[in-house]
Image (cartoon, rainbow, N blue to C red; front, side, top):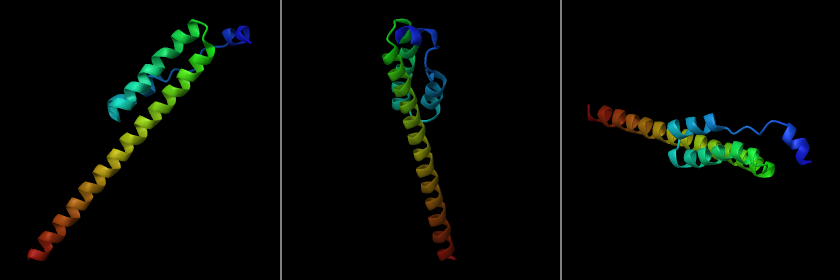
Length: 96
């Protein structure tokens, strides 16, 4: 089985996705994703095929978690801004 895996290419490391989500979305979870992404190729080269696949899966999972938290934060921010705008509009409208 190991010979069969050696002939295949390593699993995707999702490093680009991890870096993008770190910069644009959520720093702490993005860093976790980068750490797992960095482990994929070295584990594959060392012959730890199951470890490489596990690190690939973890990198993808943590990048999606960072993305989801970033999007959630953006939605909450926009709702707060919208609520503040509506409140200011109603407050100014009632003073007239």
